[in-house]
Image (cartoon, rainbow, N blue to C red):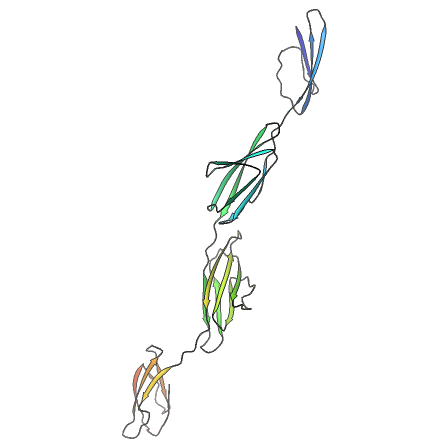
Length: 274
């Protein structure tokens, strides 16, 4: 008719059946009962409290667009992943995702212990957009000479570059600057892999050649002059431009134009130059 409860933790109650309390860890519970005839009976039991698993997630917290992300769950016996964007679930300790769209992707992992207790943790995977990049080139030099070429990346978010070429050019090989200069002596395909602050990369390629010498083609008639015929006509054929400048050796001012005539004051002068 009368009960007394006690525990290792000092819990004592003179009455109550049942008696409710929240155990922690492994707790010994002792029950003493007094019958109507005054006899006392004692029983004891051990209660082991199962705690929720300490679920955690390891792996990639950010990846670049197009790359594969790998996540690993820990701290429980069984795991179920939930992907917020697709509303899909997947069982297992490991989760792999490829070619996710740029942006934040939220995952929930629910871990279950051997005792059946569960816990959930949230994880955000950031997919960074790959940068865009363009090679800008400037050729410096004169025809029939070595050509100096400047290659540059102008996008401000690019922090590092890897230059290469085919055929191999020593000025470009293993150069990491955003602007590089090389001597070009033959047709060359130039490559760059450019990285932003997240180490996401993009690439571009450009083909350049040394400045070529194009021979000038022109005609001068007549080629022989005298006192009675001292006017010549000069015609430029190539390059196809109106920016021609003719120089004669008779001391007269330079003559400009694609098709011009010139009168020699002294017909004894034999040569003219372009």
